[in-house]
Length: 176
Image (cartoon, rainbow, N blue to C red; front, side, top):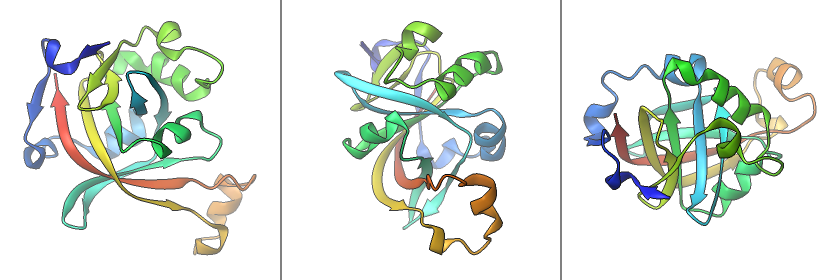
């Protein structure tokens, strides 16, 4: 696996400037992202269309929401870092595959052509347009009793598989 410093085309951005032309509603909600955790020795990725970006505890942060049955969860739980990566529109098929197939059962890189790259102690993919490297700060398991709008339980959690919300400080941003 190559290191991001070996690749041409990526540049490290100033974190304070990185969000200025980055519409998180479109990038996360409409175009999707990959959440990846692990190391060169072992990692997994999954597609996500739910999440947040902003300031928490005076730090630039993201929140990645992961359901308990997702294979990626064990990698996030056992590693300090994770990445969020964003792709051109023509990668929709690959992102759909990564969101509907488990890394327990299939090699997502082999099936999609995504090429893993080592990034500051974590993993992302060469094809990404933007990569956020995040350091875990806090994790909170959602619970039924915490929902104020009870309709969300019926529409999103019929089987009780409540997300864990992982708060991550953005420690590096890379862009092509």
